[in-house]
Length: 151
Image (tube, rainbow, N blue to C red):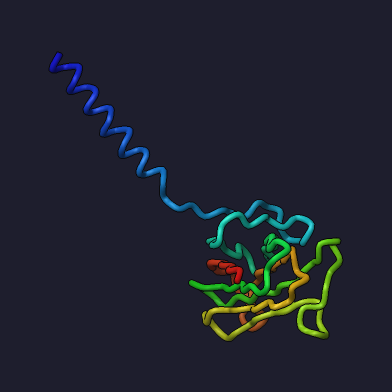
């Protein structure tokens, strides 16, 4: 009887360790190809950890904002190289819309590894596409975290 209790206790500890280890927050990976908006990888979590593999690589991401969003932001952080982002939005009818009064897209291209940030305050945006690429200044691949927040 002691042997069975011992085995059951060991099994309980093993399941507990495996269960707690499985609760770690996971980050989605890009699904190649995602070099065009039509091949964009859908963002399921708030943070994506990825990389630009070669200087000509483009990473397109699709973010569903929903219909009651007032404003949102996308930002690049933890940059290992000089990268930039561009964002453009679509309304509920899949029409591309103007984001800042004159342009159909917004971009951020700070020098070096400084964070990149785009703020969107257009109520009509329900789907946001974000493109991450190497900056024109250096044209080198690098790693990044893409984060989006909805307010």
